[in-house]
Length: 613
Image 1 (cartoon, rainbow, N blue to C red):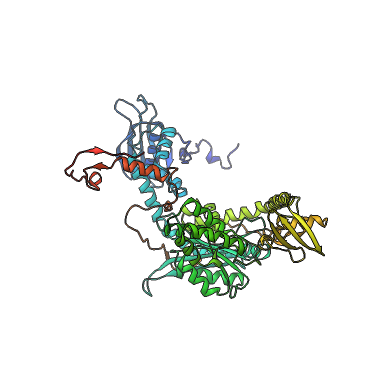
Image 2: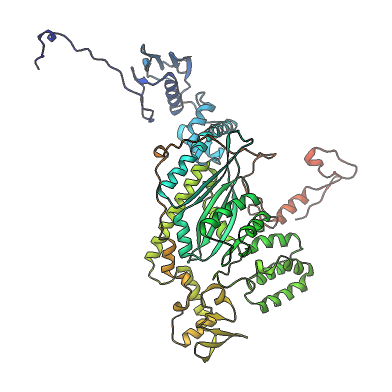
């Protein structure tokens, strides 16, 4: 190629070899003139190399302008880097790649800082990741032996780094709300902050989430029954998640709304229920049913915002309290659940008389709670829901168990995604179903059909029957969809006595199932979508004052993440009797109580061991 200017002939073009840039992707190999952004990145790369290859590399010099590392004694490997004259990069100028040393399972470069940074994202996703798993991971990946105490300190350092980043995390909440409202215009999202003094910084307190899609799905396709409950958040900041959960046509949970609050108390429940009732259009609660435990603050909040609501208590929680106050036998336990699930007053009174024979105190304490709160024969029939437990809320709490270990935005995003996916999955499931009613209802109906073969109906005219089953007789009115056993009235699913009359007329029992269990109604619940969001980088930057993380109210002792178990529950598969036998075995005659535990002295008396097994 002829140069444009003859003066350029004979001149050599000066080329500048800037060297290979360091990518940090894990597959880089050191070479001369390799370029790094800074001395810190260079030192980090050498440290990663040392741990990955199991080499006992040490720093001869380590500064901002120059850094040199060498391997063990009698090993020629070394690397030297320096800052460029323009101070725009850090370049390797000396490098000898040869090693004559062996791989070491102990590595000084695997410091606390390196371990914390290497596993930072792992601990961010799962703060409960065990030390044993961490040690095994280091052994498998790097053939590295690290003591347990070093791993404990590295995890503590990683969690400290994560906590320091929470300030920026909470500052993103206004932008997060803006992104939520961008795609969910009619939804209700609300955040509450508090201040120690009027002019002080804003401190996060509460966050309410109510998607329009979930609200419309619940109102159009679910029964007017809501389960209320709270569960603990498993981060060092504490707090609780309050939730309102519905029940779909397949008798499975349908999340409605949830909120992050400082704790479960009357004020936080009032705040949550105020937004929930406004969002759902519940005025005084008439025509609605609420299910919850006996939390005092929740009871007061429900009475304040929904005075005419039917408020049922969870029978399982009531049983736990009832058991504490009475000497309960196996027979009394069975009688408790029989009494709770009796659909008629006659059956209930019969069971209560049996309970009275076993224990007058247990009988009186049972009635003192208020039968209309948890007994089937007292609850209303119009919701078509016979449940007297709060299992829907318990299912939701377990459903989001992993999300509850994460910072607030990550947690709320995890919950939103699992609910969004659940809506899509349930819709796909019912579209594949060729039945006119939901699968679980179909199963119950088929069970009732089998029992109906043992029923003898007598036609009284029109659609009225007298049905004999074993030693009992029940009146059935198909037009009004009622039966003397009250199970059809309570559930909306024809009982065996009703099915006997339906089949006598040559009709299908499916036609007498309540509309709330049909495929069309189920589709209405899951017809709505939760719109996808963009990532944090694309969120609108909202101008607002800084929001500080909530104040940590730390209690004495080591933080506990496991739920406190009731005395009646088994601990890790061990019965209480086993523990009792073990305790008795180590009771030494002649020792004061607590002497073994606290190092007390032995009193007079023979040292004999008594054991009961």
